[in-house]
Structures are given as C-alpha cells and as structure tokens.
Image (tube, rainbow, N blue to C red):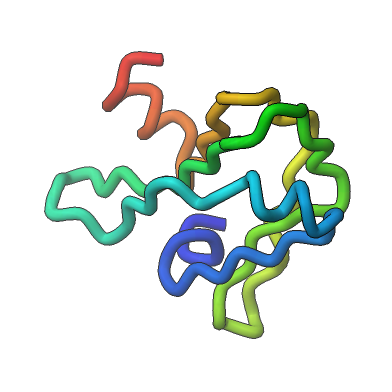
Length: 95
C-alpha cells in the first residue's frame, strides 16, 4: 500500500462534479529524507457540504498496485490523511 498510494500518485475520484471540485489533494509526503520514511497523502474538503467518499480511491501508475479505497464522509473544512504505514505516521506525529 505504501508506494501504491504515494510514489506516483494519481487521484481518481468517482463522485459528482461539484463535490470533486471541493475535495483536493492538499499535501503529498513521499520518499522523505527521514528515517524511517513517513509517507502520506492529505485530502481536504474545501466545500460547504460533507462529501461521501464511498467509491473514491487513490491509485498510482504501477499496474501491480491495487486501489486504496477511501471510506466515510469528509466534513466541510475537514482533512483526511492516508498514511503508508499508520504506526510510523502515528509515532512521528504523535496522533
């Protein structure tokens, strides 16, 4: 999942056009110089309404990597962080 999400990220979202315009990839961290490497993608809802992420996924350019499906609802002004390794991310950012 780690490189599948982060190496050559392509955001593929299957939702209504208006919701897509409000949800953006806000930050990408991959292949950092830190050890261990802390990799993640941060998604932000810039809109005024919640967006259902059912059917949305992240995908990279490697055909051997599967889709990383997103779940839940992203509230207005909310962020969603998708980490390559959750435990590494939590240790680094103390969440």
